[in-house]
Image (cartoon, rainbow, N blue to C red; front, side):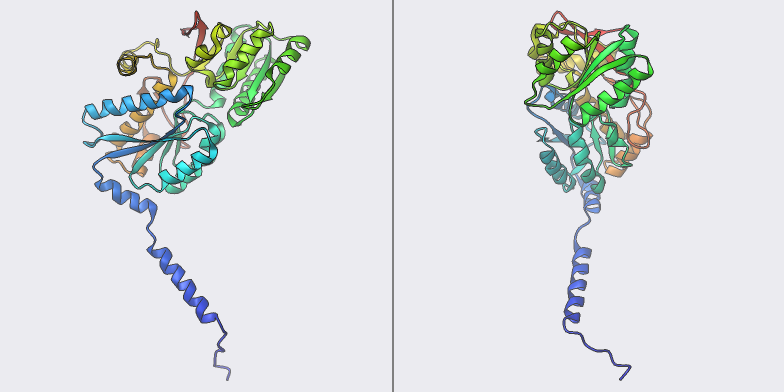
Length: 387
């Protein structure tokens, strides 16, 4: 009897179930392979674009569409027309994740441009990484995004470490000695404040107090009264965003605090003046683009944007314009619209000349050696500063 195997009730059923599951898994389409097959025969190249539609920096959408129109007027990319698939991420992490899952499952997309907020990009990135679909962010600045070893995530905006260092260096060069820091309590604000403070300490600029604030419902005036009454400082660094950043400055000035205010890239928009009025006069703001920057490429972009929209472009519009052209140039360089070829070409490209400066990426998709520029609100206009 030792050679006989005993039958165990249910064991045959379990084996059949396991085999059926294995067969089903084998029959399920591989999204990466399905995208490769689809794109090989697609007549149109499509880029996903996830960005807030109701925000001062929604001008990125206009800049991206202007780039698409210009590319198509010159024959498209590799002989195919280019199009955008636009989704409103509503500045919501949940919505960003839903969009990422939808884009990741869409075989017709060659790459994605997303998001304005670091918290959204950090949450959505894993979906694009798993789908092997390039995500290029012209907005998210948190350094952690490109420190996770992703192969498919790229940043076309300066990160917080880079801009924070340059901001601190500028305050030091202007002779400031004691600064207070007010930061938005989210990944962007905390990260930018941290890098600013680190550089400030190394350069002898003392941070005498630092406070965080929530996006809504914060009693800013209580903090500012404490600063006015109990602290000695000669500058304020604001690591915030719009629209609340303009109201914060209004409250600071209403309390009679008249020291210079230096703001990070989150306040870089003409909407700062529209929302802040006279209170924002003299405020210094970091940016990566200004329509008065020299050069024929900038002049051509400004002229085309004004003809299309009736407005002068801001940095967000320039970032959208550059993002589309960056991806188009990567496809042309690779001779392919396949995601893997685009990602490889982005890493291999050296100093692509955009309207907001040159672009070069390292092995982790991080933007390398891109300088920020500075502007100041004078007579109700953000003026380009040459020094």
